[in-house]
Length: 408
Ligand code: NG1
Image (tube, rainbow, N blue to C red; front, side, top):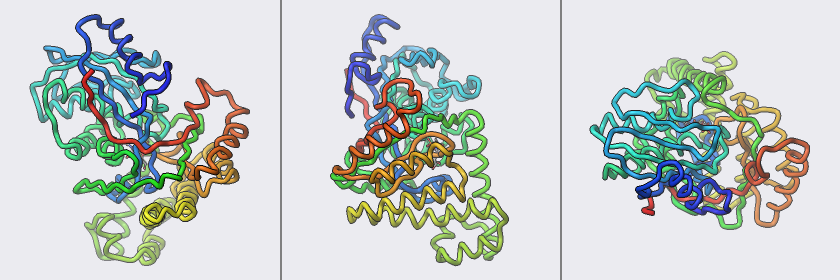
């Protein structure tokens, strides 16, 4: 994973200097790096147990650590927005108030303490290059980094996919009824690829991202905080999808089936017809998004395997329309970004992650990417005020590998 400029908060030198200033001797022993991700296709269906196609990012969380000899975890954050957090390891850790960043570390630590008790803690300094609350999975990267840190100082080495499954459960500590995509790709990604992620049992199948494809990430400048209204809206969508499943399976005489069993049992046209009969609006549209997104995941994967960027882009754009009209998780700014990217030569674009703010991903090629970046900069960002640099909100995604631990 690259650690670029001097102001990069994931650069080892920046973390080491902060560590020394904060804690003094002895020196830290290891750095954990956990990537963010873009989801290429398969949005709002992981929590229905349906397959998705995310890709890990070069943007990541870096956590520099040294072991402690007691059961305390202490983490200082290079970002002054997030004050230092210290707490005792235990099987029932009381959470900080909703929205506190320390809850993501507590989520990981509590889950591991329930299976690996007793554990020693660590002192850590954390930095992140993942835009926060942007649909790029900064939260799961933090959960994964805290977990890998605790495991490292205690000499435990679980298999990545078993850990991913455990951490998907663990992250619900913060109140989000999330699926398991983010933890899976953060731990299981292979550099240069996107992965089809399947659930129960968790399985990752990497697909090479064609080398001339360029995936542009553009931030709408609105945070989708999962601690307030966005969390309620997200959880409400998961409940709507569950209610749709119950009604449609009952209507078809297939009560008790999961979404995965249902889509294997009946063709999409029949499932859509059943939804139209059994459901009322807006649950009918939520369900229609889920059923049509399953087909888009298959088409997206096929397009990637054939290096057919036009077909891939068409899938992204169709997914955005579905997320906007049927799932209702887009915003005016996300729609504008999609429109600008498409007019600037992207073969397709869509919001990525949970939506309601956050980012889009737009598909282009080596010969179109500069125009996409230029037009997004001129038409979307130039008229607005950006905190930090343009590169923080507009960048090309490199397909990165999964979380790592390196001695320092
Ligand atoms: P974001 O908000 O992009 O980090 C969330 C969920 C995913 C998935 C997507 C929507 C968590 C940790 N992540 O991701 O599991 O459901 O929304 O596809 O809850």
